[in-house]
Image (cartoon, rainbow, N blue to C red; front, side):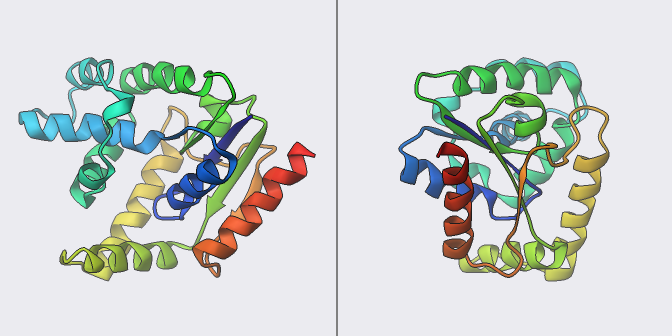
Length: 207
């Protein structure tokens, strides 16, 4: 069983995907971390974020088994990831790795921006998880404050909207719901409520 989960930044799809992976005993890949790994490597090496050849060379070497969420979840790495994610050669290199992950025996859960539309168009079930920009910015703000980081809600809201615009309007694999995706708006749901609804959606397809 392959479950494809898409949605914009801070919609809750990552937490939801991890809970579903545990519930259904499936391996999980947060494809956003693969782009963040490329952005992080570029920043660490002092390389420019607009050189597609350098970024693609790094993307071809990303180790899916060594993605450290605690390091890669930093806000500035997310911004770097969003810039390299528009590069066709980077997307192609990571696409191959992501499809290889999805093809393992027994299935997998992948979450990202284009899983249901590009990476796994034949997934058994597709979920599109979303929430209002204001709710997502507040979640990101609360998350950063909880870690002891400084957080400016207005700036984060601006970043969220800019990120949405970049992701939805890029030429290569724009963020959008797959035609047969189940829509899950988490604006007024806590994670448990969203999880129960998602499980019901998956079960409706399995039975």
